Length: 221
Image (cartoon, rainbow, N blue to C red; front, side, top):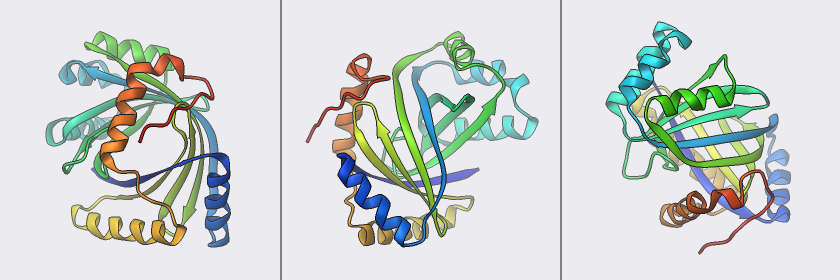
């Protein structure tokens, strides 16, 4: 099982994203990828039915990992994702007092499936899930040492950055978080507080049809 250590910062305007981009490149960051993404979030549903319906789409090893995060994680966040034509099932679960949707430390399952995004969505709906919201974004992904830095232009949010380290040992989580915070201080970016992030997330979920697939943004303090 892998653990995702991730801290977000809201950049908002293009010029703020440009400043951060130039700074990390000067520090030696290498651009790994740039892509367009669709992310569909789901709520409710039956995980036992979902694992059964997905059984033929994953290896035995991946099935074990999926069951593990369902059984050991809390407050699961269930998503389908399309990245430049590649479709994935994504499941995240919280490991501390932050949320599984946007928290700092989370268990993570993210695997490709050989089907369309629409067909994967139908499997989740068959398992009793329902749409929470649909999200769209353009992502630039950079690597600096062992830290992944994503610059995301999100419908609704504008520019958002994520600093992330993925570890496979429980004991490495605190050191990874400290390393991320040191780099964020060097980049002069401020953590997006969890309560504000939760308000933004709730607002978007209630109004996602006004933003999905557009350049429209909102601002909540």
